[in-house]
Image (spheres, one colour):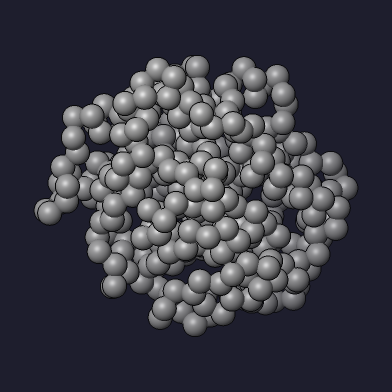
Length: 359
């Protein structure tokens, strides 16, 4: 059994109130002033790290949020960030400023993008190269490839797009109690596709467990769509009936009312989620016709100094499994000297060990 505040059920989260933090006007004003200063300074985004961003009173908000995300329930929504009336460039600077205080941004795809636009761009989720963020599809519960994922909401859809979270610690403990055979199977290795976003020196798939532990710290990496993709790839191991049942059971438990905590994200909301103890999903949505009204969120993947050590079985995907080291993300094909220099500087300012990707 895993003992953790991240072992929660929806009713307990609602009653605790720890998941939502309303940002005060003066705190939001300080964040807005930081964005204005960054814009006026004119630095390229990759030249901006923590020392360049003076957040004033909003810095304490992020300090509290960090503790909740790593040592508490594993997620928080900061409501009331000053996104309204700002240009797309200013809101990207806002997301970057927040990320600079929390950790080191990780590349999210083959282009090595550090901020992704979460909106329907006509992608196909259930395909060998499918990624959910650029579709309007309902998503399987899953983790992202970093310690923490941050979503800054700019626009909501006309209908749908409900954000859903479930605790993998709670699912793990329930399986240990009721189906220990499935829990044990999830500690084994599963094939995962890189969804055609591998770097030149990476294989198109890798092996990793769903559940793992190191030094008493639990972690879950559940990306069903990536596992599913491998079954159509030549040379990948076939899943056993027990592995299929274990994955089906995790999905069924996660989406049930007993485990799933559902929320609507509003414009100005920042959702921060610990990928090692939570899985997340989103319902299908229908968008507005007008481009400026379409559902739009900005996504950051962050490696953070407070994060737990990870099992050596996750080394192939995270590149480093040690605590306080830069890890996660897609190695990508667009790594540049500017990106490597950013990572080294950001890691040094946060006291983290750099693990640079080769060019």
